[in-house]
Image 1 (cartoon, each protein chain N blue to C red):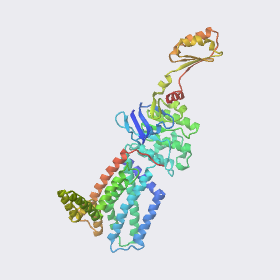
Image 2 (cartoon, each protein chain N blue to C red):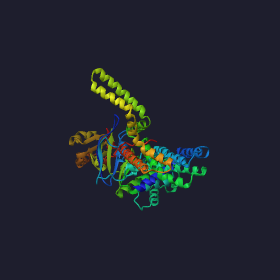
Image 3 (cartoon, one colour):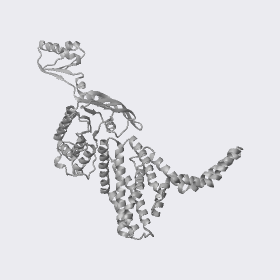
Image 4 (tube, each protein chain N blue to C red):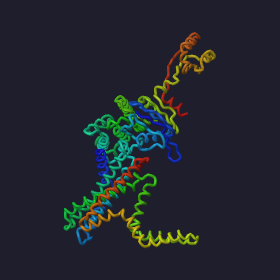
Length: 290
Length: 276
């Protein structure tokens, strides 16, 4: 759907983005993560059309940039407006002729569970409610590309779960989402693709599944110390590690699991745990930015 | 596109009068009308009133467009801007909102004038919009260039410097010609001292021309750009347009179109960094 090609952006002598490239498949949920100052917000402002890259380009399939729903990180609203008036204007800017703005607003409010606060002035809303107004605004108009900058900020646990289910529903509808956040735990549950930025450069850009499948491991835990067997196990493969009562088989060494198990059992050891582990988003993130 | 521009323009128009600045403008307009049409300010004929109301509209549009553009270039509007397929739609909405706000203030002044001056008829007031709308449109587009929203790098300085050169050429053409003549005469003396007589003589002739015929020529040339304004003023005072003067509003609209295209180019190509 979108192809981000070699984007660079400087602010005076500060490099915000340096040769950033990745692709956003249609219907995917792309998580953009990285430490503070990595360039995530600059990337979002370029995708939303506020900033022009110094070099590189954002190309859309078909050549025309799709309509964008954008929830900025810092949500500021015209405070004197009511929630429904604010959303009505957003709807009128996005809907096709003949579509009912009132119906679209009611649906968006129901989606973020804010129907009861429709006639409330935004300045009287709590931080969490404002966050939901921002998300509702982004959902209006059936924009095929939705940009969410820190969507979980200020939400209580129940609302966070609700937002996750909204994201999953949007993905099922075939809409493409790009989410920037520091909440790796929540992101793992919704994103299909991952872009890790650090100091303006892409450290990882691929499907999340691909990252998780990269270097999986099997952990075998025994009741006793396995040090006496280390001399037999380690020479089997460089991917075999022995630490205390745990044997870890990484990558290709996983193929040796039967051999390792029979060695342990024949030596009279009592196995208590055998676990195949995939990498967590946190592991991938930590490795990428180091 | 028209639906989106109208929706945004209506929002910004309403928003401008809900703000403290907007209310202040309404009060100042009412005071202006009171001073000119009720408390003194008597004039020999009705044309004076139409001239005052007409020029007030252009000035008001200049101010309201700046005010609205300032409010529209805040972070709270980021979501609107991202939704539009083109930034130019946003610019058009701001210009339209400024024009409507200016017309609102002009209408207020016209209503007070109608109430305070029985000799000013409704027919004369209704003649105002077709006569002055071009000036209002031009003032609105020009004021866009004074805003942070449209300014890119030094564009504000360039646009208003060019305007100042034309203005100075019209009103202070003699000062400019005399200054230029003095420089030419100094150069002429320098070349005469170096023995380059052909150049020295040529520069001497230019210096003499500048304080003679040149004075009028430069003033007229630079002043040509302001002809539409003068033509509308003259027609408003005379109470009717000559055939040539009738073209003046069209020329103003051409100026406004050029300036809007320039503003659109600046706004489309700049990095938008919205303030709080």
